[in-house]
Image (cartoon, rainbow, N blue to C red; front, side):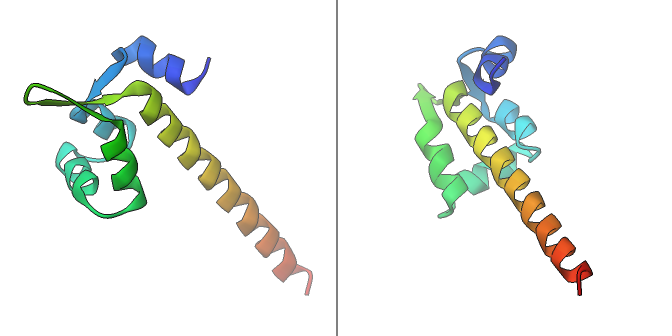
Length: 91
């Protein structure tokens, strides 16, 4: 099952700010501040945002891509640090 399928099954096609905050392990207010900031994550969150009246929702598909990209980044960092550790032990 893909990340998008899991999110849609659990939350539906649109997620609220508190739901996205829980997925990203942030507070809802922290997510709102990140969303308004000029960072890569902020730009991606703004692109995923959908306003329905006064309510703000986020597309599950876009949040899934964001989560998958961050997991790939963390995995790559872990592999880089293992290579670095291995290189320093060889001396």
